[in-house]
Image (cartoon, rainbow, N blue to C red):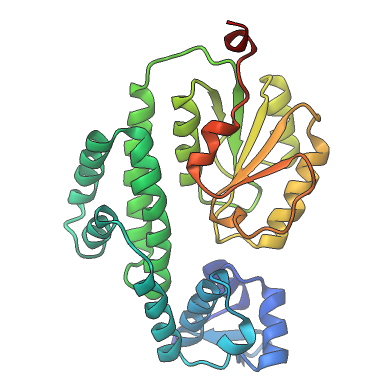
Length: 297
């Protein structure tokens, strides 16, 4: 019997909400589920793969009506065409090759070597930022699997934590709380933002992933943070992210800045005043408030 997926599986694996999947089913005739004995929707592996590619192409600006009519081979062709137009840094392609073909122990050593060669700031901006995007692309297209994606995330986490520990301790004029919204399980962007802030002398309270909004507010107030930073991956529903950010802004005191960054924040609708969206890591440093004592000197 072929492997079947529920609509919840599809939502989790593709980042497309079940409401959207039902709308596409009625409007475009795809996805086309089978029904089990309890009349629940079941989907094939082929439909899951098509939806992964569709999600990737949607994020690149294409429309669902056209994509829903294409078969798996046609979707792969469009995806490959888009990838050919992208310039992938040689270091990123090298890391992808190690990740896809091994040996697995070679990934950590290569990441550490690139960090040593480039320094932390350039390593974050020129290697890890494009590598994160490339890993997501490789997963969508089937070049790597979940095991490889998790292996990359954990090896990168080890490298960044070691880099953070090696930074000189400087009393910061600003404090920032970093976390993700409820439902967001990807935390690598948090560590990358933490490193960027630490390079500027900002003291960071790193809470990890999926912190309830009320607890974010409590942590920011109790720790006297001037910034709350939220990392958003592309796997989270954009509407959910926007709704939670607006609610968090209302809960936070006006004097605390609310920042949101990552691939999941890049295509958000216009946010109300008091929410700053970042599309790249190099936008962080100029946005940090100046130390009044430094300005006086």
